[in-house]
Image (cartoon, rainbow, N blue to C red; front, side):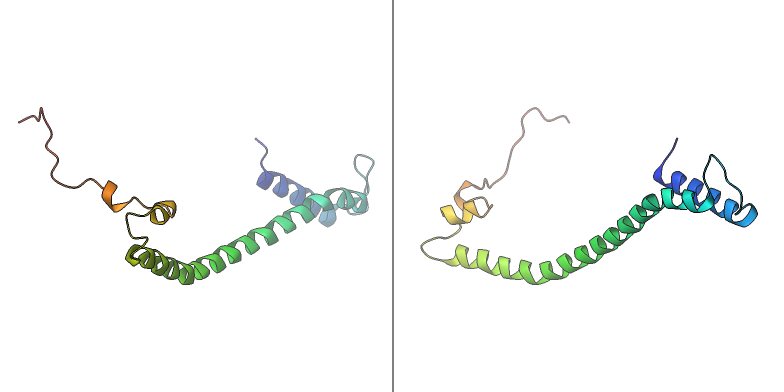
Length: 117
């Protein structure tokens, strides 16, 4: 099965062998330089992918660092909404923020019937 990794290995192996052993000879109607020109976009694409992957790793690290600032602030806002006399943990704003209103939380002992002994 051809994969991007196996394709890269094949391209680079063919190119290096051709460069090292028969650089002056043509194959399939191509010189070594013509072959390199044809495969270069494939190699360039791989280089761009590597750069983008490195940028993605860096951006994820930046996001995580920013979350360490944003999440405590978000928690303080939610706590403030809960403590606000006109809003509170039973209010619509609290629910709209993704939380369950306090009066909708079920509490207490749950007795299951038909338990096996």
